[in-house]
Image (cartoon, rainbow, N blue to C red; front, side, top):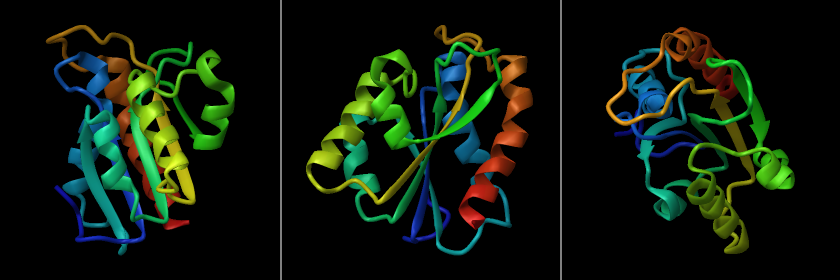
Length: 157
């Protein structure tokens, strides 16, 4: 579901809410869609676990801001912002997200096809647990309000 029909910027949350903290990106999208203060020209979508299916979702935007659980070796709930180019250069030493192969493969293929937006930013949140049928951890739940504010700041700039 989108906050507006099609704008310049896409906030795309990915993940699986049935796997604990892996659902952080999807929860962020749900909370953003409930806010009345989204800037004009910003579309918000739930990308779920679409993998290569993300390409048609992102290709018509100038800027894409991805939100996902990311295994970064940090304290659970830690949020980091990085550009796709930083994540791509780091390769497997620094996972892009829990969906490393799906998400990274989709972005790499989009780039090879000339469909990658000019600006791709990733906001990753370090999960505590990603087991099936687990609730969101307290650490990640506490991080979500600040993550949402950081996303809004990003798209307003």
